[in-house]
Amino acid sequence: MTTTIDQLFDVADFVTEEEREWQLKAREFAQSRIRPVIDQAFEERRLPVELLPEVGEFGAFGMYLEGYGLRGASSVAYGLVAMEFEAVDSGFRTALSVQGSLAMGAIYKFGSEEQKQRWLPLMGRGEAIGFFGLTEPQGGSDPNTMLTTARREGDEWVLNGKKRWIGLATIAKLGVIWAKDEEGIVRGFIVETDTPGFTATAIENKLSMRASLQTEIVLEDVRIPADAILPKSKGLSSPFKCLNEARYGIAWGVMGAARSCLEAAVERSQSREVFGAPIGGKQIIQAKLADMFVEYQKGLLLALHLGRLKDAGTLTYGQISVGKLNNVREAIKIAGTARAILGGDGITSEFPVMRHMANLESVRTYEGTDEVHQLVIGRELTGIAAF
Image (cartoon, rainbow, N blue to C red):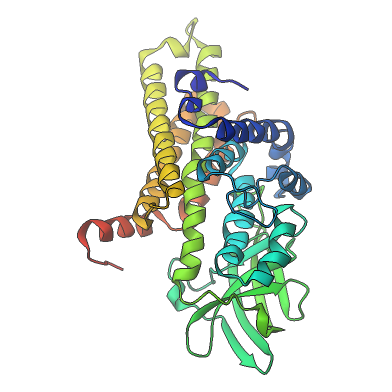
């Protein structure tokens, strides 16, 4: 689907042929498979899990990782896929992120060779869904308050604690639980969800991200083998490295939501007439559309720049925070302006804008709130940590 927005500023001018192929393949899948079911899924508070194996079939899970049957695509290619998924719904893009960047990413970065060989091919094909268990009910943005513990008993680890706002755990076969060992050091552990003492419950009362799956996990004397620990994980820097992978994908993804809202606003401005003329012929409407378009393009170019830095191995935490903070913030503004241009109809499911607005409020919060990223950037600028 070629849009006027694409024609005005075509990202294809700045990406490789392979990256463009990934984008177009993702767009086709998102528009033909996700879009027809997403409004009903949002109403029913249901992630379209039946589509996840298809995502695995075309190779999007963990697509920028090397080996283990994975595609080894560029980070830019992954960003383009995330953008196309989120152009339909943030919740479905979140599933891509939880599986590929967080769960698979943790095993890829910190797992043993045996763990990688066992799990990554299955997860890449979508035959095993994973979760990433870091956030706790009391902790929020402060994982230093982690209460989940891992105690060594003979040839087993015994895990106890709670996790909240964990994606995909009720449909997952396995996940990575972050817990403090007896020395108070945060370590990662692979936990299979059929292990006695493991319970995951879906969080149902959401008014945002309704077509996605977030859960609460309870661990009660969950016994796992000694070799279930991710041997290369040590300290909070380990999960933070995974979070930065997800934050990178967000910087791209939200530009998809922004584009969808902008497209809806442009189409409405052309078709809706007031006082005998299309509202798109009014200077104030064109000014709003122009501002939305400029911020969308700036965000897209920022995401592309971050992708090139990431592929070159030079992307920093502070740069990722710039992308997450700016692009989510601007996507929310674009969605709000689009809603205003659509008028009263903008709050209906006839248009995707209100759904994007609600979803983006969640994206603004997870993987670091605005304030967290402001502090990260502030530390980079001053050399002084304010948190």
